Amino acid sequence: MMSKDYYDILEVDRNASKEDIKKSYRKLSKKYHPDLNPNDPECENRFKEIANAYSVLSDDEKKSNYDRFGDENGQQGNPFGGMGFDDIFSSFFNGGGNGFNRNPQRNRGSDVRIKIDLSLEEVFSGTSKKLKYKRNETCGGCGGKGGEGTKCNRCNGNGFLVIQQNTPFGVMRNRIPCDVCAGQKIKITKQCNTCNGNGVNVKEHIVDIEIPKGIMDGEMMRFIGSGNSIKNGTYGDLLIQFVEKSHNIFIRRGLDLHQKLSLNYKDLVLGNDNVEVVTIDGKIRFKVRKGTQIGTMLRVPNKGIIRENKRGDMILEIWLDIPTNLTEEEKNKITNLTF
Image 1: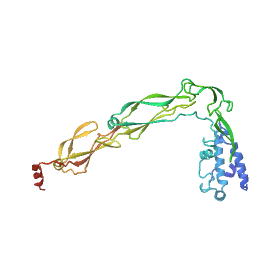
Image 2 (image 1 turned 180 degrees about the horizontal axis):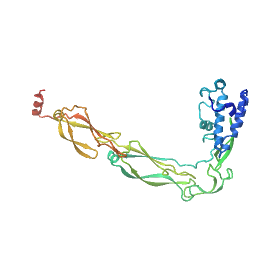
Image 3 (image 1 turned 180 degrees about the vertical axis):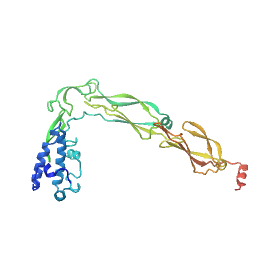
Image 4 (image 1 turned 30 degrees about the horizontal axis):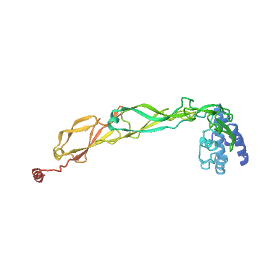
């Protein structure tokens, strides 16, 4: 059973015509629209109830189900194509969620994206880098404004214009950038000689980066405000993507390090308690049991990559080291082997 009656929400009786329902909906939605009641959360809830009720009563099939069973029986007939309330607002008011951007964000510069190659050894131990790159920086001569000017008469120094639109909710207001000052709030009368009116200058910027142990291939770090600036705006961010270079011994898989260990026939058959193995942080001695088969995977605990107080293992894949340059004596010995 529905907690609230849709007809009561739209303030119409059950015999109301489709046109009466629509007329009441438009009147109520305008009355309780959040843009017209910015400090009243109850109006926003009321507005959502009104929109939901209308989505049912404006659809013949859903209205019929509701009249018979007290339930619209799903949302298949949604006149907004299954969109949520924020999507509905967006479709009518050019985005912004509630159709009227009460807190417009300041212009933001673009992000700078840089790739840094790291060796496996750097990944293992962690490292620091001093990164130099060029970016657009706010002009010191004009403070990023592009020059001296007067308040824009077109938008009265607000940087935007308020226009009206006819929508299913009635006549609604929307903000657009001023077509005279392009949202800059002032009309430039004297161009800045330092930046030639651009508001920014290209300069070299330096960032010190501390790269933690175990960074993953393709992982990114974001440095807020280290990107490009923009005229009369703020800085974007610096995005650094790390690329792990291939290693001549190890293959990294998560926190584990894999390598192929080639042993001679004797070690595989008889075993060897003193096999030397190279790890990422030095050499160790490792025991190979007799009768070890080619392709066997042996795990050496805690000899992998370190990340956040966790350490992976080293995985050894056993291969047979087959000699290619044999003496006649060695050939005879192999020929005379019997099992």
